[in-house]
Image (cartoon, rainbow, N blue to C red; front, side, top):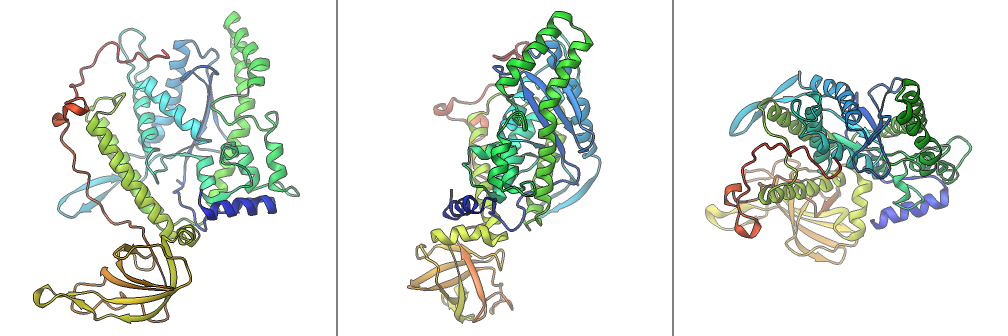
Length: 489
């Protein structure tokens, strides 16, 4: 937690209302997101109990498994879920745009991508488990399932994996999105309670956020947002209803289970749409469009992989695949941090407090300064910034600036409250700097040790060249009858 976030939490405690951590919205919101609220049976890792899903706040679809330990009922639930989710996903693949690329062939990219919004991080983890438990299933042979079930599993796995990438919002937890933009007067663990979190941010009229949050902790008013259910509800309501279904196998008993889980899901359904409304009240940050383009590109690529008949995602990455994924996620995290700071002065303020960034006034410039001799002479404009911020940067550190995206400066000297910088990138290629590239005396500027520039992919061996220290080359995947088997099956 940054110093600024800690201060915001203290102010929230004093005022009784959540405090802003951002001035703009740092996550893309689709015009038609799909809300997905899953529940699982207590004590079972991947046994779905029920789900509420849909794109219309006023017309949710309720899916129920009256006996979650019944294999056939579980996969019938998955087939019902596929009937809702797959048309939503496939409809977004129909409209594409041509993307031109320097040095490469143009390609078609989907104009939009799916966005599933779930209540919390637990729901994201359960979505991944549900994908894993269904993507290896088969439409033929023992324990055959509907053909849509393994396809749904592969899409859910893709979305759960994509959710691990910083800045990706194809599978978004409402609690994470809200906590990114507001600080409450409770602990981060308590922020995982969606009802309590929303109460701090948007309390009812006449109540403080703290009072509303205390009321929201009552499971009779606001049941848990899942995927786990309230133990008292399980013991007093759910277990008798499931037992009655086991004894009679009647539609009436199944409806009783359905009504029981509906009472737990409907309050969360309203909360998630309320959270979406709170997020929509913030203007979108500049960089959200670029990150959504990356999501759309990933969505397009996976859809093409499915169309070409690629195999299901493996249970575990090979050594090279795992290293490549980690490198991509690290680059995405660095880029995401820089973009948020450049887009939002309130986020940048946290870096100013730690000395990783500073804001000040330009007091001197030398736009014609050069280095080198003859043909090796290079234009390197100088500027001196007067600042009152603490500056904890080393000489030679590379800095970026939100006022001139793509420009880089190097720290030449730090003398008390004066920082001398040398512009090394983004001033133009001529003998003189491009007009406006060098800040003028009196201009207010901000520089930070954050970069969003392109980084080449990590240099890794081909999978077939994996060294023996990392298990050697991975074996070629050959479909087997026991592929669908899991510990929880």
